[in-house]
Length: 110
Image 1 (cartoon, rainbow, N blue to C red):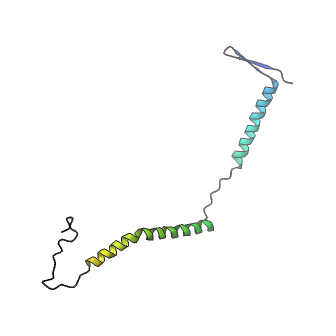
Image 2: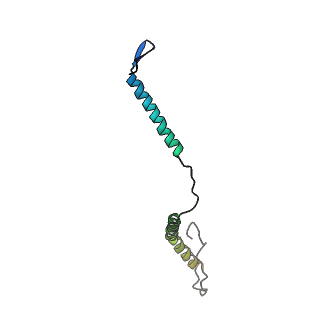
Image 3: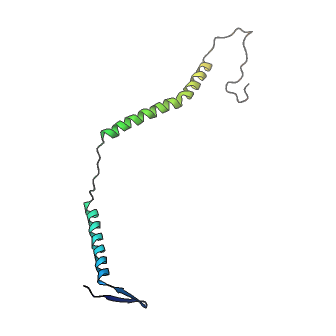
């Protein structure tokens, strides 16, 4: 087999056997082959067309959003309608029945 290699670094002795060198070289070569297979097998494709599933999802989400907006705007619609009814001109009262309502939207409620 291979001869043993002795490496001395900073007063320490490291002995590499033939089996150690064989396993390290096998690991490096297999890692390099695996990396090359992954790197060169990548396909850089960008798909720009829309699919039917995405179109259907957009339709459904927009329906849900519209329904949520209608639900959220209901109280506002009711308050706007009641304010409009309050501001509509009322038939004039007889001079003795006329009441002073004060300033409209007064912060003191007069």
